[in-house]
Length: 152
View (cartoon, rainbow, N blue to C red):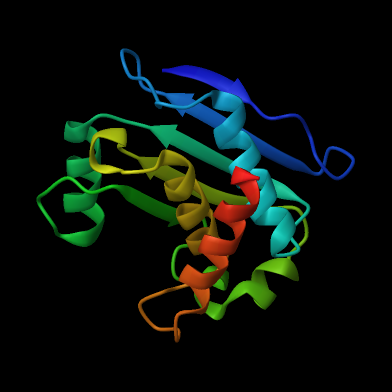
């Protein structure tokens, strides 16, 4: 794995770590991925904690998808809040109320992702309690707004 870390944000209270599996290319710059995570967190009012983003191959994401979701197939993005079904499941307000914490990991396979930046946004939103499978479209609308803002 090769690593890159984002500059501390919010007086050093926010750390974004990027890990890229050896031999892989994220298809965009490391800085763009770190900026996508930072902007997502800023837009939802989280200015402290640690997020790790991992770019992996098809075999690795398939293994994780099988272990954690009982789906023996590759996917585009997986999110693993450190608290599991705890605070993140309570929603974004509960996450914002925490002191600086380990928010969790976002794992992305670029071969199954049309847009790696959008996958980062999607994964970070899940870490922070958003869930498009149970809301009325709010998460995906927010994801689209953040993504559009990054393109400007």
